[in-house]
Length: 450
Image (cartoon, rainbow, N blue to C red; front, side, top):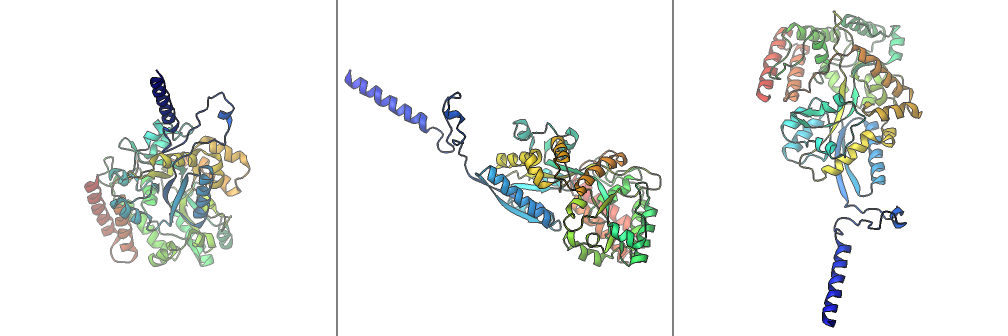
């Protein structure tokens, strides 16, 4: 009997030790009864496995600075998480990302644009984030479903939308004042735009409009929509507009303004694009206007807090061309080993009032209604940030239904568009030939990829 008792005692000790040590490889959990005093001791927190999240984004120096502040704050709140930051400018961002995707070396969190998200979804490079909405990690209860589902492609949520924005004309009021030209109202037309641009240049010697609208197809998309067409067909296998005259008129307008020196020529514009946003003509007072997204005034606020916003010009018949655009997304790499932790950070980014007090709507109008209302009443927003909120509210009256995400192959289409336009601006081809060439090339790219 003594031997049996000893064996039972030994077995009891083994079982007790096993229960105490179970799960200790990954985390130590407070096992006290929920009603005990020890359960209320917040010093006994769960110890989580340290992780490093690689994250990349594009932007200017101001965005780089506050995003790093944001990452530091998140690490302060979650000491087990550290970040490897990979900031970049816009130029070359997606070229580098494409190389990383092909070698399965993409960062864990990728700032993604509406122009390219379809491409990376088709390539299976980015994860379906719907799983993290379903398991409660990402809270979308305060986000308009139409907006957060803008990242849904082929039944998969390829990106979590961070903000919304609308195309705008950013303008420098000092240049208008110097030229003695009135700032246009929302009902202005493309004819007004051309006349004002030329007038400013004649009076000041500065660019009336400080860009060529060929960085991507967004400006051309707006122009095409004003003629009653989508830029791409419903099946994404061809261009959606039928008349090459639309392309001809768009490029002819820019060509005429370049000849009048109201726009930079292609060489000048390539040099401008190499500058930071804070050093470009509208910010420095060497240009009057530029097309951008509605967060431009906030982005430039530290270098020039006078930049204003106007809705882009209307077409001749007043057809609406604007749309509310998902400002940008956070996507998560399909091969990331820290998808759960990445999703937790994304949820904090879009829903935390503390996080958004650091962001201050620089990436666009926040998607969470709770965050928007909090910022409006917080007293921390500058006049320019409030102006951006108001611009979006007012511009909605000029918006039509948003286009679908850009088709697969959009980067090739963008390059073909730029090449076709530049061939005219460099006097290498007639505008009619460039229009036909762009259609042929774009249709081939789209049919091959979609």
